[in-house]
Amino acid sequence: MGKTTALLLFALIVVLIPIRVMAEERVVDGAGGALAGVLVAGPIGALAGGVIGVFAGPDIARGMGLKGHRHYHYVHHTVTH
Image (tube, rainbow, N blue to C red; front, side, top):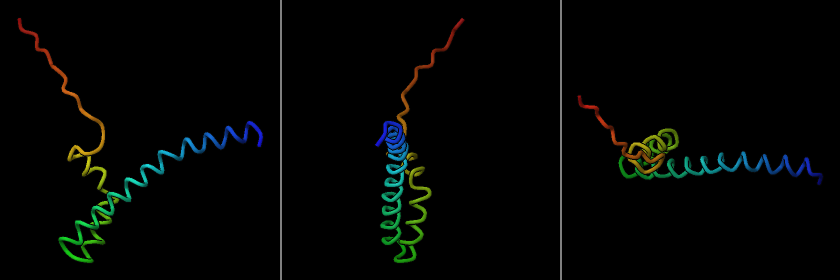
């Protein structure tokens, strides 16, 4: 294996690792949605909850503060005259 091939393979792996991690998070979000759907509406709820979990799960988790960037409190100073 030449240096160029090894370098291209390494670059491909580095690019694909984050995609795999995001895909795994979507699977977990979908499974959580399906579980919640089963508890609420049975098999139909499992299907609907799984679909909602896959597509909206990351946004829901971010809205609940479970995933995403941390927002730090910034002090705003007011100027008084």
